[in-house]
Amino acid sequence: MREAVRTRTPEIQLFRDIFNASPMGIAVETLDGQPLFVNPAFCAMLGFSEEELRNKHCVDFSPPEDAQKDWAFFQQLRSGFLDHYQLEKRYFRKDGSLVWGSLGVSLLNSDPSPLVIAVVQDITDKKEAEKALCETNRVLENQTAALRSQEDLLKIFVKHLPAAVAMLDRDMRYLQASDRWCMDFSLDSSQLLGRSHYEIFPDIPDRWKEIHRRALAGETVLADEDHWDREGGTTWLRWEIRPWQNLDGMPGGLLIFSEDITRRKQIEESLSQIPRRLIEAQERERTRIGRELHDDIGQRLALLSVQMQQLQDDPLILSNAQNRIGELQKQTSELATDVQSLSHELHSAKLQYLGITGAMRGFCQEFGEQQKVEIDFQAHDLPSMVSPDTSLCFYRVLQEALHNSAKHSGVGRFEVRLWGTSDEIHLTVKDSGAGFERETAKESRGLGLISMEERLKLLKGTLSIDSQLKRGTTIHASVPLDSGSHSLRAAR
Image (cartoon, rainbow, N blue to C red; front, side, top):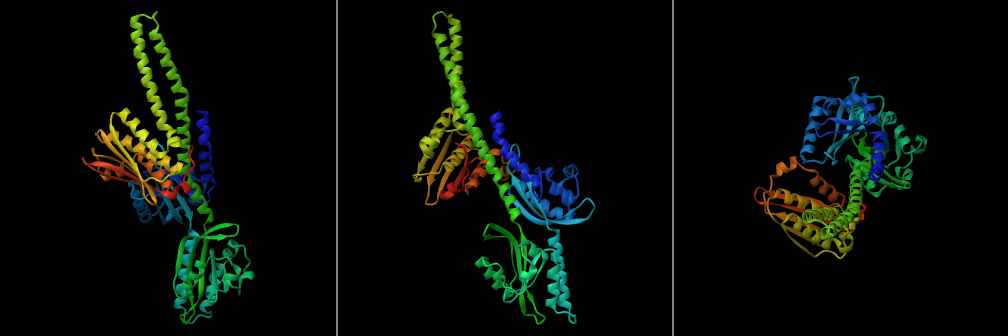
């Protein structure tokens, strides 16, 4: 038990540190929308204490029209039609004021039941800037006898805008830049004005230069997220580029709005690693328990069976006692066989020594004998080398699929097919039994199905289930051949 605790502690501590230190609000909710945990940033954003937020429902935080839209997406998440969604919405603070947030909601497949992770970034300043920009444009469009030109007004607007924005002419020379722009890129406004954008940033991606040309031709271009591979690391940005016009209606240059989202991307990447780490921890625990069953408990049961056989053969033991000892010896042997079978399911050394085909054929044979069913296993056109992670993934999918089929199909014969193509490996498990309705399956996705999906997702694979009532079920899994380089490093 101490070993199991030590195994899980780093993953739990990693999640706790990310959760509490995140500058963005994070809430962990049930599938009913009830908050279980909220981090300090979320509490600070809304002005509530952690206890107050846990006593509210997720729809209580927003105006009715915003909450209705969010809840509609949430319902699709619960039903399995979505596994994540994003939207911008308003939130009520405790003092009754409104703030804007960029909400990202994802499903976390956890044990014993799935949970929902909501990540919220405060974008009130961005919304106010957009509102100010719209108001400025409206004023500029109606200004027919202003004392200043539109360009002068834009320069004033850009300079004092509480966001990262730069104003450039048609030759991409700086006319003005906001204080936030200078701060984000560690520059002084005196270093910018009159100089070329490409001189200030000589490593700017070529694709952005093409976007600048499009914007100078009159197009507005934006990206919710884009990366810039710079010296010292990758910077992630959310940006918008739009042309500004002279009083004669001709494009005078560009306005570039930028927001550094590198920290947010790092947090998202850390959160995305949690399912991988949970599966790795699960495999390490399976391996430990499987070896313990095989090397210790299985050996002790075998020794006990031998000793009971010796007692049964002892002429000094009474006949009735010998019969009873024989029955106990038989039960002990059957128990040892069951323990050995469980050990192989938890950790199959055959994958390492026989490869994916031999291990899966052996499991089908053992499972068939144990469950008293017939399994037709066939494999063909597989590559000479299959990565250990891909082999383990298919082995676990096969185990789960056969257990489900034996439990629910009501038939005694199954087909298992394993084959390769030029770019993928495929596995199907088929029965001609009871089947089920797809809508019912979506509403009752068990942990077994979730586990199969998560394993395949980590290898960039896919899982599909085709089933009809009284016409059987076919489970199909596929994984790209090059997925081994991107796979989890689970203990085998």
